[in-house]
Amino acid sequence: MNKNQKVILGFLLGAAAGAIAGILLAPESGDETRRKLSDKAQGLKDDLSDQITSAITKLGSYMDKVQDELKGVATEAVEKAKENVN
Image (cartoon, rainbow, N blue to C red; front, side, top):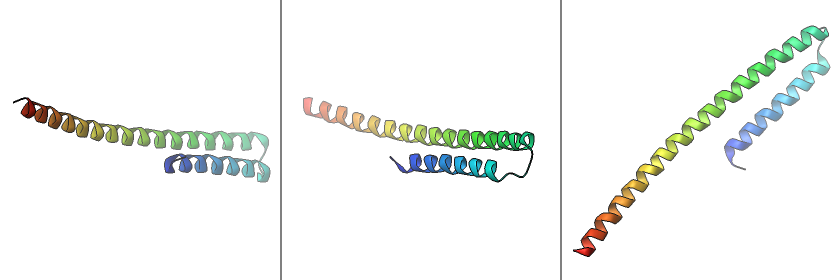
């Protein structure tokens, strides 16, 4: 499991623990508690969506960098092959 996966897993586990603690310790009525849980769940969903979008963007940038490096290596290989033919 890489660092990003650990961070996301920790985030989700912390959110779940917080939600459970909130339910158990809530002094509000059931309707109020459900509304708060719904709001919190929406916030967590938005946060997770932002993290996933960020990870995808970083991955795309990394893939572009790798692709550029591979193109450079391929170009060098073709040039060396042409030199060897001549």
